Length: 305
Ligand SMILES: Nc1nc2c(ncn2[C@@H]2O[C@H](COP(=O)(O)OP(=O)(O)OP(=O)(O)O)[C@@H](O)[C@H]2O)c(=O)[nH]1
Ligand SMILES: [Mg+2]
Image (tube, rainbow, N blue to C red; front, top):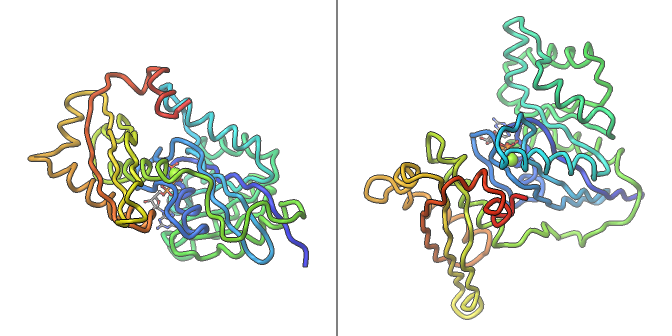
């Protein structure tokens, strides 16, 4: 039997479900997921291996109109992945499209067209995601709209969260990947460092729980990742700094009598323990670093450059 292997870029608008798909296929939480757009800030790779193929999946930040240096970095990350991979999987949230079709509005809006322009000349598969949220009968008009827009790429309806349709999606990827042996051992999940994933999972909890502009003004830096007792006492001790831009954001993040930061810490610790497969002691410190989202040196220091 022939074997196919190569790289696939998961791209699309913010909130389409790219990180959910990556985590689902690799079978581990390696990329942050939240209900807010612009959760992912850097590319993250995970390896998905079957009997027939090995796809190195690159999760990317959502393509959007970038106004700040941090956002410009995010879009650049996605564009670099677009240029580098063997094939592109464009994820689209089907739910608003179905709603548009139902309301008689145009399904193909400017946001979709701007992504189409960037992906149309690459080997391409479209994953129409979140079909579990689409009202019965409204998927067909959405698919027709793609036909009318003369989109040539195969379109696979999927649900990244339930797993529906993913076999069909992977079968389309297989057609676009070169025939060659696997690049990684079959049980390899990611090259990302554990401490990087830990920072992302802490940031994810902030995106999930904090309101207003706090998620977009925060960054997480792992100051200490102490594994000295991992073998002997089955524990890793982690100190993380949470950066925000203003004292008011620090106050929101800490919450009344520290309730917010405690909740974030306790949920993050559960996830980190699962990831690291050991007990975790997690200490979080919230600090104000004025205007870090627009300061090139601060951005570089945080890995956003
Ligand atoms: N109902 C449903 N929700 C989904 C599905 N896939 C993702 N979601 C939800 O959609 C939201 C966004 O998911 P993410 O995976 O963070 O989306 P993303 O494309 O990585 O977003 P950015 O990193 O911001 O670009 C989360 O609340 C997910 O739980 C799906 O198939 N069905
Ligand atoms: Mg993401």
